[in-house]
Length: 417
Image 1 (cartoon, rainbow, N blue to C red):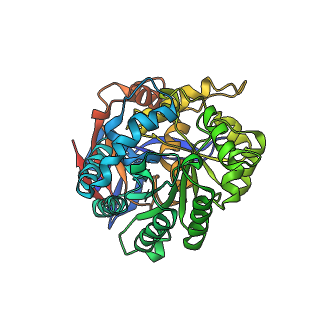
Image 2: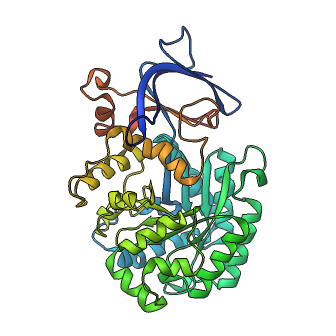
Image 3: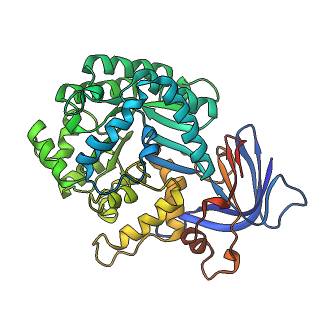
């Protein structure tokens, strides 16, 4: 297909990577971008046109599939919110049919706001996690999904034997491996080893999870230092000099590790994340909603830590990654790094696309360039953005999800307004 309009192209000439606007068109073929041309619009095209913005698909590096039905449970902090809201909702995934139906409608929601790739938590329920993985693969998305590992400090309905859930996760890793050469052609879905967080995992389970991830070169996703009461609970349960060291001791820190939140970290912990290549997934809307605190994104970047961006639904309340990126700008302005400017609209848009792709180790996703995967969003703003003082800034700060006219996944139209 041929898609025309104002293209959001990679821009790596500045101090920070970003995107730039250029009128032009692109052609897709067999799931890839075959050509990219800057200049005038072609005489005929399939999608887009004058006044349309053509963006890479948005990428979410931290979300919870079963939590889309609990967005907006306000007034609680993390640990109370987990007990009163999250775990009861996740218990519904004991029914695999329910889990599959929910995954289908969650994907529908994500496509409607332009999200084409994500990293997500399922629940402790093995068959439901399997159904979710299968659904993502069938729908053509690039996704990383993990069965959640919990063996302590949770309701009985959530507790699993450590050996059993590790064996179940390994069976998922065998069917949905991380390495592309191990997957069937066209399948862009992988399993992640997913200990929920250190409070709900025994030391034995954390170590077994680290060993399993190393064996399969798998993605790892968990939570780190989201709020202050959590730090004391982890120290009581696991000891160690700090929270991050608990994960290091278990072999859970690597370049394929996604750590949600990372709000309360010492300088030593930031250095440890940088040394191991671990990724800090910034979740600004969730941190605000649950009153957890504010990640100092710039301190992490200055320490050499790779930072990604995630919605953290359902603690987060925004499904749109453009709204989450806008929240990242606002959060950075209040994070306390004196004199450091907030990310620009260009840098923030890059973060929600190519930046997140790079953090995931997906070099051919999240960008409009030849031979990249054809994951694209066609956007038609109803405001005079092209003549604005800052066109991309206007689109980002006035963003309306109804502007998404088509979402294209792997070269196929997966959503049309």
